[in-house]
Image 1: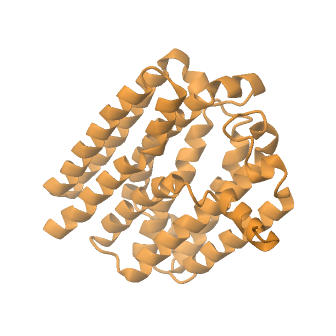
Image 2: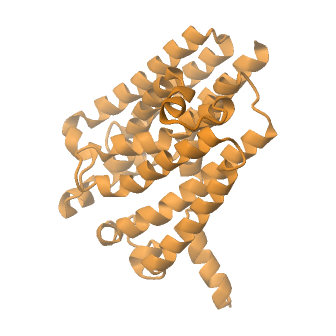
Length: 300
């Protein structure tokens, strides 16, 4: 029989999606790609550890905050009705305390980098906390999620290149335009895979009144997902060409395009199973881009 302490621990692991690492990987791969680009190659073990562990911690904290914000909606959705906060197994205050502890641990890691990265981390946190509530106001809250899930990109540039800028102009100037273009491109990828995710719950979301990109796009959802994939690959392709990255980088993009084409076969009939599988396996697309990016700097 499981002890009460162990039972609580298991609930916390479920709250932070310990057994579902896909969300962490979706955050991690573009962040690491940006870190390699910002550093001009391997960024060193310190920054690598900061961003790998920090990504896991912030995704976990975001899950806790999101479940508290969405608990009244989640109980009406089959896929989310049994989540710890929604089911009442974990109290909202308890979940928020856990999320705050995880966010503070991530902040402690950022403190080992530089003042620029520390300052930008507050903007990253603000977007993360705002996202759960955007579903009530915006027709495409996935765009807000796209910014939140892409903010590791400017953070990577700040940590690798930012130094100790302290004034507002210096902080803004410490993150180059390249980082924001990479963020924009990555935002399209987030729109693609989170629209697939929203397609899974469309019927439930329509019934309870949540706004999602799948609902807004209607019968054009599949076409839009494929256009989002294409926009991501084109933006990152153009930026890679401007940076003079070699053939491994573009091989990674070609592999990612192949994965996106396969996802079309999964979502074209809009089945819950197919759309959820496409979403869940999207991290391989991100890995292909990262592998190409890292290999480009090795071969170069």
